[in-house]
Image (cartoon, rainbow, N blue to C red; front, top):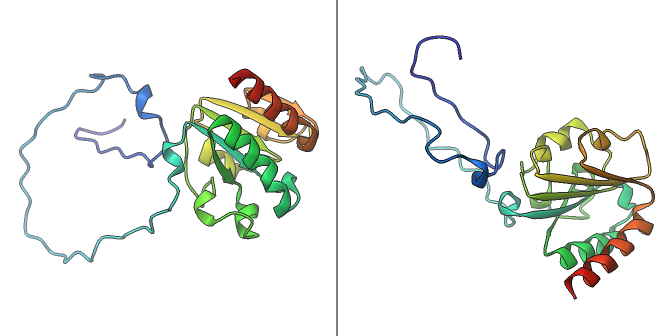
Length: 178
């Protein structure tokens, strides 16, 4: 950082996993501060509408993008989420189409998450989506486009049809849990 102390740093909620912080890694100091005359009258604090689903606390997220093709196909993603004990999320086009509620949206105009596992189904990886999930522990992407930007950040990638891959994943998860 440039300039003299003190410094004030903020982070967007959900940007980092709390369990990854190292206890005692930052020094905390108490300072005496003198505030001069108050020349402004503050307005009421901004109250962001609370999402009914807080994806920032999810350990596993299965997210769908345009590659899911239709509202009816979201049931397949939900089956995978149920098998994994995951939450279902989406990219903006899915929420804009009202296929999933807006509180399930991940990205710059949605929630920012950092789950242990993020499974992207049919998500191309536009930067607006990436900023909302890039800090996930492990990213698994399924997309039929081998050049999709999501593969640049994915830890594991399947280039192929999600409608062929997801049923196999569901079966394997069920076998592993049995």
